[in-house]
Image (cartoon, rainbow, N blue to C red; front, side, top):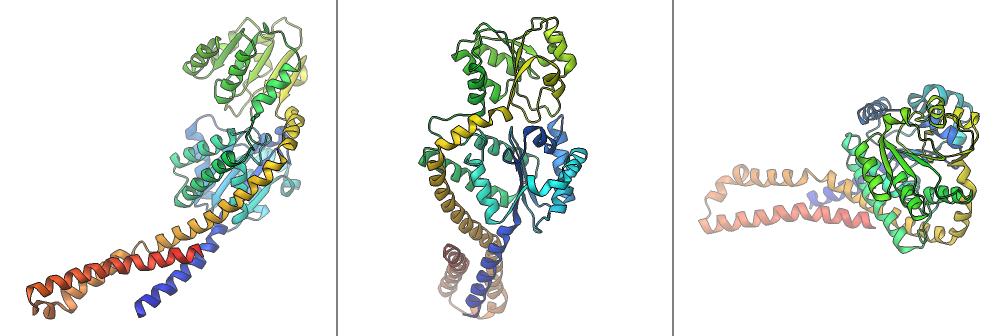
Length: 430
């Protein structure tokens, strides 16, 4: 009885402590809501290889005593999701962002609190659920952010930056987002950044024989390429760092494929350029642009869906172009938002449910971890009782009685392990 009461007290201790541990979940989020893309790109980690990104994120994690970390960068959002014992204040957030990009962030220091969203505990979890469900996206209802979040988690997991806490949160985030997409009409007749950019292009009434030059063959440009083919564009060339990826897309949409290094010597010109790569520095600078247009003086259409931008500011400012980027699509995105208001309310009801579910699951998980040593300890008590404390008296019993006693002790061992864990889960559910 004393043992059972002690276990009950321990359960309550762990249960209450688990609730406090929800505040270890923290997120720093910067998005299109408060910044233009030109400013947003200043907060993105610059890297050339995955190894360099891993090194920078690991340094960030170690410098700020972060136990687990997920880094998400999209065309309109930067999000750093963390599991960390101590909360941040804004001076420390500024210090963290300066470690990413010292020069640019210092210039924004005077208004850092106005451009950064920082959430802790249940509000952090709610924010993540809403991001993955596209409720925080520039284009409400698009599913690309869901894929991007899962990709960011898997990447950081491979880097060794995540652990059991963010594993459980990722699992529940996926469940919440899927529920929103399937149980509401938030994604019905979906639009996306790509479809809005295409709509802007078509509003210019371009001839379908116009020369289209695509830089990048990732998911965004793959989708754009399919749209172009569907709308009758047939004069397309694709440049990409991986020629095999460019060739694969070119086969699908009837285009020509080149390695990115061939861009410097390409002589056939273009009328429409579409850029979207993972590069953190401009891919199209003034020198490359001059080489592409040569003596042509007609107005070009430049579509840049990258953050940071793939087309340098000097190219846009110094040439006769129509420029379509994330910022120019905001008015179209606002129209999409207004048409989905009712589904946003329904989605948030579902998210509240999944937030409650996560809280219970997380408390249960903390209890399971707290009791992970219990089976070994109880077995040790049983073995000591049989082999030392009561050894002599047990040996005096008949063989059949000894066997029965051992069976009873094995049975009690299992029950003593299962009973407190079961009680703990019931307490967590309440």
